[in-house]
Image (cartoon, rainbow, N blue to C red; front, side, top):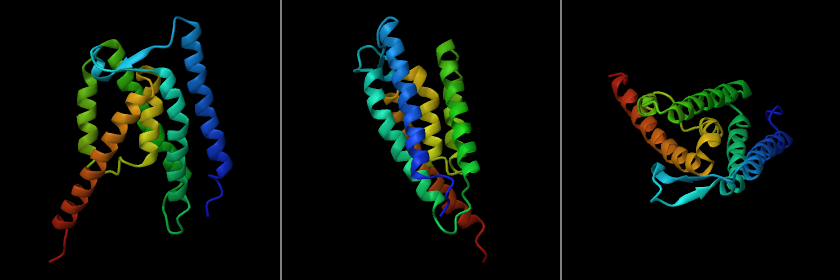
Amino acid sequence: MNTNFTFKSRIALTLVVTALVWGHVLWDYFHGGIPTHYLFHDKNMPGIPNWIGAIILPFFTWILLHRMQKRLDKPNTSETKRKLFLRFLAAAMVAIGIAISFSLGFEIPGFVLLSILGLGFIFPLYYAEFLLGWVLGSAFTFGAVIPIGFGSIFALLCFILYQIGRLLRRQLFRKS
């Protein structure tokens, strides 16, 4: 059992995320009101205020941290805490880059998302640390609910693509 990522670590990380998201909501509340995010950036679609994400995000974080811990605790795993952190960091950086591009009006995010889907054939981009990095990296700009929903669908797509890629690799490199 890997003792570096314990129950106490999960509690501490979840509390940090909770404090950050509620700090952001309180800041918004006292500085002009809590923003509402709309699906597909269309005001005719249902709006989701940031305080709903502040309720959901700590539970989501807890669940994903639990999934990461289960993978670390497997007896014959090559997973390390460092690998998990680097995957989380990579996803968070991509999400932050997309959020900044979106805020500045650049049309880069579509190309980045398509390239991520392409990489999904080769790498297991559906892991919990990728999803958590995506959600936390984009929650400041898009709220928490929209990244959770989009990221979960995207993780499912990456899972399907990775399984297809594994099947293709097995067929291509099968010994006759």
